[in-house]
Image (cartoon, rainbow, N blue to C red):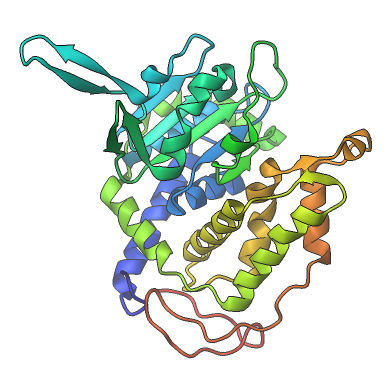
Length: 346
C-alpha cells in the first residue's frame, strides 16, 4: 500500500497520469473533461460507457486511451451474429493430447474496446456480465482470471436504434460511468482538420505508460482516505434517487460503491490524499444518471435522469466539515474542512 510519506513515488505516478492525459488529448481535441473522466474510471477499476451520436470520436477516444498504455488491447465489433464464445473463448478438443484445450476469447485483454455494444444480441451481451463485475470468465465449469489492470470501454449510438438491443439495467449498472463526447467547439474542430486532415494521429501514437505503472496508480487510489461525512453524503445522494417521484428505478448499492471509488480516483488525480464532497458532486451525473429509469410522467414532461441528479445535488445537504484526513494508508491529523485549504501531494 502506498503511503502519504512516499512523496517521490506519488509524484512519479502523477506524472504518469499527466503523460497519458496529454497523449489522449493530442487525439481528442477540446474535450479535457471527457479525457479526465476516462482516466478516473481506469484508476477506479471501473468500466466506461461512451454514448453519443455518430462521428464525434467515441471509438477514437477508446483507441487513444488504449494505445497510450503499453498493455494488451483487443477490439470487439459487436454485431447481431456475434456469439458469446467469440468474447469469452471456447474449449476445443485436442486430438493429439486427447483433451480439451481452452482458446481465450477477446475479453482476455487488459483494455477491451467494445464498439457499438448494443448491436449484439442479449445472449452475447450477457457474456460480459461476469467479466465486468468479477473480472473472471467461467467456461465449462472452469474459472479463468482476467489480466490486471482490466477495463472495458464500450460505445453505443443512441440515435440509430434499428437492429439494436438496448442494454438491460443489469448491464448498464456494471459500467462505472457514462460519458457523452459531444460536438467540438469551432476552434477545436478547426484544429482537428489540421491534425487529422492528412494522417490519423492514432498511427503515430506510442505508449507513454506501462501496465505496471497503472497498477501502481490503482493501488495508490485504493489508499485515498474518505471521511465518514463524505461517505454519508454519497449514501444520501444515491438514496435520494430511490425515493424521487420522477424515477421508477433508483441507483443500486453498486452505484454507491462506484461513486466512492471514482471520488478516490478524482482526489488522486488532483494530487490530494483524501476525497472531498466536491469530488462526489463532480461525478454524480456521470456515475448515476445512466442507471436511473424515469417514470412515464417524467418522460412526458421531458425530464431526463441527468436533470433529476442535478436536482438531487441541489437539495441534498453538503457536509460542512471533515474529520481528520489520512494519507495513503496512514493516519494523520489535519485542519477541518473547509476553514483551511487542503494539503496536496508532492
